[in-house]
Image (cartoon, rainbow, N blue to C red; front, side):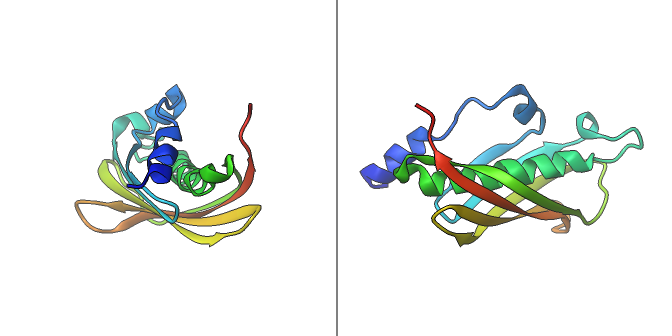
Length: 141
């Protein structure tokens, strides 16, 4: 890792909110065009009907896409905020250790588009997938 990349990696948030921690998200790798992560989902993430809540998937997609998009613009002293999240819930699950992979589809000067796929590690089946459009904005002082 060169000095610029090391500096950018050190700038990524390390203290997630209680809300973000509740999703179980663990970021594994980050670069300017791809993020890998995982989460252990179960009863704490259920709807009243006993399956993982779609809002958990939506939050994981938002978080992974935002981390990758922010990493991509850190050298420009910017970060990325979500402006549109379209998540498709593909199949219900009661419990799953999931792999999450975010990939940049478009990275422009002012906006980015990321695709994020959530896969059950045990079955290899996709549980949800989404696209996150972000706006690149200046870092706060």
